[in-house]
Length: 475
Image 1 (tube, rainbow, N blue to C red):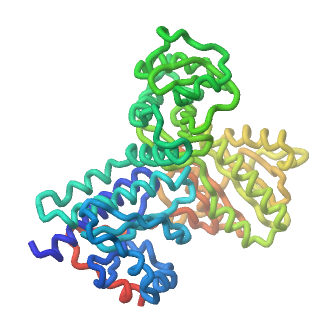
Image 2: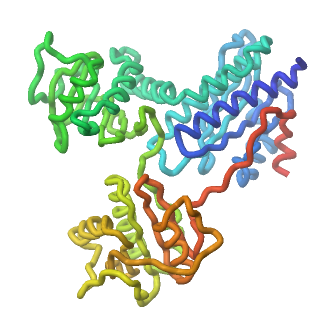
Image 3: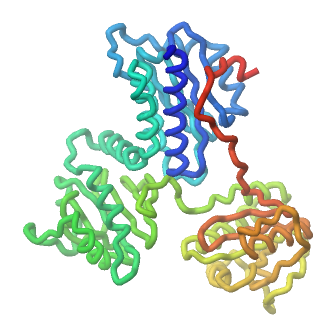
C-alpha cells in the first residue's frame, strides 16, 4: 500500500473512532485535524463536517502567516518513534484542542466542540491526547492489518479519559505517591449507581480519601478495621448509603473499604461520588468532572444552558436587570422540571401588555422575584398546561392551553406539548416558549421555529482522499 494511502487510512480510523466516542460521551460531536507529516512538508486539514468554519482568520494567523509552529518542533534527533511531545489547547472559542509532535508525524492538532453543558473539558482533552499518541503510533507502523484498531479503542475510551484526567489532576495536587487506584474506584461508582434498594435508585454522597488523610476527617461513626464493608460489595454499600440521603453526611472510603460516616470538610484531592437517583456526579476536590447514568460516564451537567433563551431576551430590548431576572427564573423552573423528570411548558410573554391565554388565572399575579412565589411556580409547572410569565416577572396564569393552526414543520414524534408550542408561537409575536419533555430534552421555540433544533451533519465515508492544504481550505 502506498504511504499516502496508508496515512489517509490511519487518519480516517482515528477520526471516526474519536468522533463516535465523543458523540456518546457528550452531545453529537464533530472532530477536525490539522497536521504536517514532515518538518518541511505542507500543512493539511481534515474537516469533513466543517467544525473549523468561522475560525479561518485565526488559523491563517497560526499556520499560514507564521512559521512559529514549525520552529517549535525542534525535537531531539534521538527521539524514539513512540515518544510524543504534547501541544496544549489553542483556546479557540467554542473548541477544545490538543496536539503533539513526533518523529513519525511532525505536527498534529485535534479539535472538537466544547459543548456548553460540559462538567469539565478535562476528560475530552485527555481523549484528544490519546488520539495524538495513537495516530503517531499508526503512522510509524508499517503493519497495514493493524490499521483500524485504534479507532475501536477511541470509540470506547470514556472511562479511560475520566481516569486519565483524575490521575493527572491528583498528581498535580499531591504528587505521584497516592494509594487510591482509580479504575476500581470508577467501577465501584458505576456498580453502586445501578444497584437498587427496595426498588429505589441510590441517593447520597460517597467520598474516596487517601488512607493517609483519613485521620483528618471528622467521623460521626467509624467502623472497626476488621468489620469495614468491602467497596466491591455494591449491595452492602448501597444499603449504607441510605444513612446519607438528604443530609450533609457522607460515606468515607479509602478505596478498598467503607471506613465510616462523616461530616464537614474533606481532605485535599478527595474524589466525590454524588448519587442522585437515576444519575449522579463525579467531583474532584469539589470541582465537577463528569456525570454518570445508564452505567456510563458522560460529560453533561444534565442541566439545560438555555443559551437560545438568553440570546432571544438580549434582542427583546428589556431592561438588563429584568432580563437577567427573567432568565434566572426560567432556568430555575426548567432545571427543577428536569431534576424531577416531569414535562412542562413556559410561555415567556415579552409584550408590554401580556396577551390573554386560556387557562387558570389568579386575582393577583404572583411576583416571581420572591423566592416563595418562584417555589410555587415550580410546583404549578407540574400541572398539565403551560405557565404564562410576563416581562413584568409575574405569573399571569398556569394550566394554560396553547392552540394555533397546523404547521408544515411539526414533528409528530414530539407529542402535543411540543407541537402546540410551535403553533402558538407562529401566531403570536414577542412570545418565547420553553418546552421540557419528561425524558429531559428541552426545546426553545419562537416564531413557529425551534431555536434548539440540530441539523444532521453530513455523513463521513469510509474512504478518503488526501486531505486538502490548509491554505486552500482557508481561501
